[in-house]
Length: 188
Image 1 (tube, helix red, strand yellow):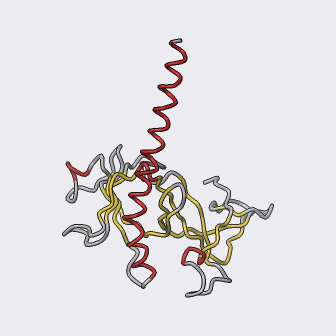
Image 2 (tube, one colour):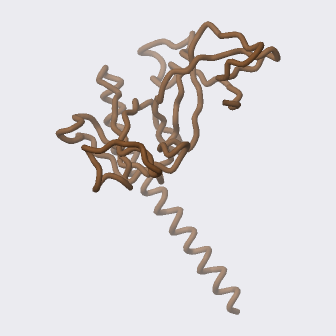
Image 3 (cartoon, rainbow, N blue to C red):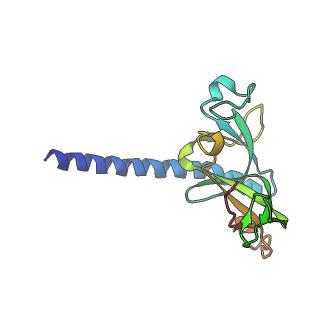
């Protein structure tokens, strides 16, 4: 009988937990969608990612890298996905290995491709504590308060790579179709 009750308590707690996660995801999406709408109208896509672990003690005057990451970093909003928010993180050179696979590493035998790739990081919704659409007097851009617990103490759970699409039609296609994902060997 005790096992039966424990199972149902666990099952109910998981349902409540999922409901809370979905509600949090909806709240974040509602706060980010106006920012994306402004970007589609030609406004700046820059945002500021603030490390919630360091915010109260270090923001905005100390942005040194510690074991908890930086206090804040700049990002460029790309899109919303089912599992989180995508941001442009940087540009990387692309190389082609002898076997035809693409890589970010320029080792012996790899030839440089004629284009660079856009590095895109994904921040899961559950890592985003709050979104301030207005920003503050230090940044004047939207601020995402995030747990920096991803790759190398950055807020990104994983990175993907994109190139600009040759078939994108501005005004006719959704903005996110401007980029095409490419498979890159993660051997860096």
